[in-house]
Length: 115
Image (cartoon, rainbow, N blue to C red; front, side, top):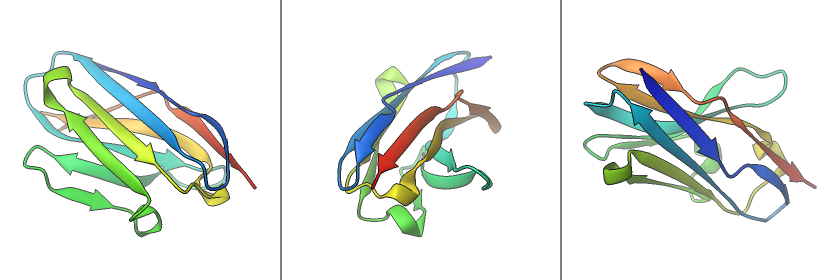
């Protein structure tokens, strides 16, 4: 089993910044990818960004140039630096880790951007 612990959500004003972090623990032998998804009220969960084991990244168009993903392989951790936040970034953000082809999810952390 793999456990994910997220931290860093909160309330911020438009234009502000937040940093989300996620640490994976447990039976981790082969991480294929790590990343972040988000789900706003009334919407489906959507990909924000992910980075694969060979450093390929995928981004939602809405966050390109504002968000940055970083990974610490030694700590099995992934972070999301979010800059120039907008009210439409308000959502619950979920850490996602793919281990041996299996998806694992964090419980989510709420990010609220006030206008």
